[in-house]
Image 1 (cartoon, rainbow, N blue to C red):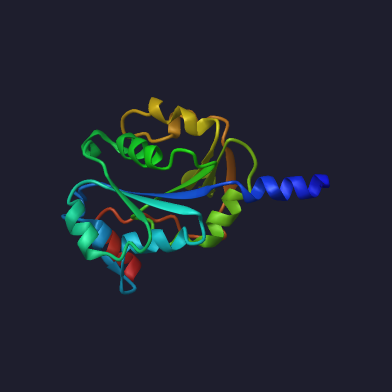
Image 2: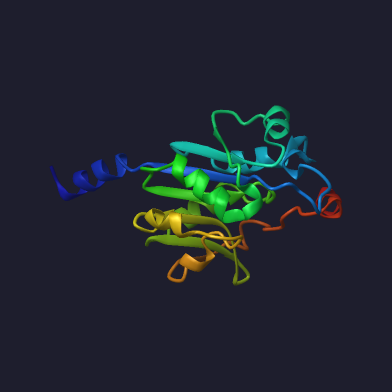
Length: 195
């Protein structure tokens, strides 16, 4: 077996997973924004579509989990309900990453950023190292790609900062030429992007 064959065999055994964070209550939106329609599909479905082709996808729900599950086509995604969703993004991350234990790479996206598609995922995943994140005009955003050994530190996550405090050495990948990172926080935000 050549070195190239060994590399291909190792890559074939790599598990790449996607994680959609969709647990929030949508207080500023006035309801479950995960179900807000854009181009005929709920926002959470846009996030799931961007992760198509990965080995596994987990979507973390929390507030109004049954309503979101019943109102969107989650396809083959595994659903994890995070009872501690009100504690902040880190609780959702811990729940999702626990379900994905054993994955070599996890691509993390937010359910309220509908314009970040597969091209951004590919570019950020191609970056080397234990972590990489998309930046837009130099501003950090999503997706965030986390690999071992950083994945093993998920239990350290607290509050609403997500992986931010652990991403000091993350490779920053400029993606403003590929996507609009707008997130939908309010109904006004949704109306603006619908125009």
